[in-house]
Length: 211
Image (cartoon, rainbow, N blue to C red; front, side):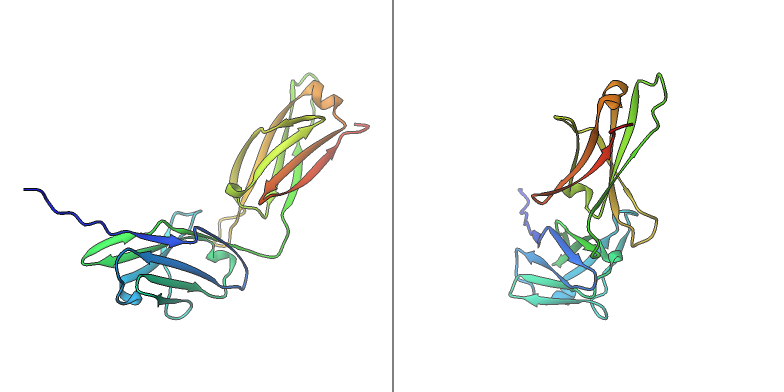
């Protein structure tokens, strides 16, 4: 005898939020079925991307979890700080079934502008190459493309991301690497690192003239 199945889903909106320190943000949890009471049918947890730890979101003292229409619960996060950055998940409860939303990434930024800095190893005679690093701070690694330009040529190199420290307020930064052949290093007047994000880009140059 075939077993009857029921599919209940919930979605979250938006998928990504940028907000400044001290501001508020609204996260929506949208159910397929009618929700009676958000305070019992929907709970929220935050995932710390650095530690992988899930913590419950306080919706009594610090934030609110209210109903909007028949199928939507809205979490309002107030007076945000950098430690509130993370991925927020809505957990739904319906007839003894549990569901989880697709998550909303919340990025809390201070008012500092993105910055680039270039580091390079000393060129040792007879060494076949020089190692370069471009540090990109103030931008989320998944939202930025970093590349290099030497003369008329563009290079991608390889990138990695890391955290500024081990606290809950830590932010990610991008570190881009490039190995430049010694001959090209000696001939280059300027080497540029570019960070491209949201239709804009910033750059930093390493002056080689007279080196």
